[in-house]
Amino acid sequence: MALTYQQSTLIKSTIVPLRQHGERVTSVFYRNMLREHPELENYFNNSNLANGRQPRALTARRTMMTALQTQALGTGTCSSPRA
Image 1 (cartoon, rainbow, N blue to C red):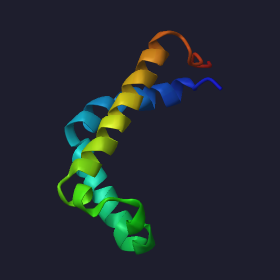
Image 2: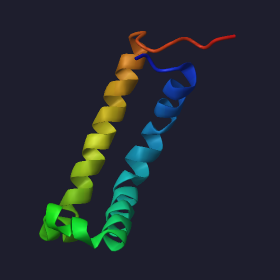
Image 3: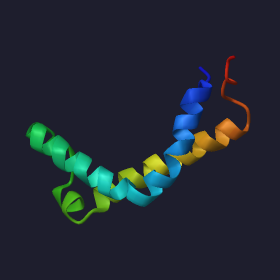
């Protein structure tokens, strides 16, 4: 399914903030998720959470997926805006 023009614009607009603040956002995400759902702690390596490796890994993947999506948008795989 192709992205709409609005969706593609939203994805493109997240690239810079994701690169600048992604690791901090991801660290807060993990902290909040595990505080609200402690039963999920068994799915994560506590050492990797504590030393920042887990948040860095998720941030890197999110950034990569956003960049790949942006490249796909440049190839014309998204829908054009409708008038």
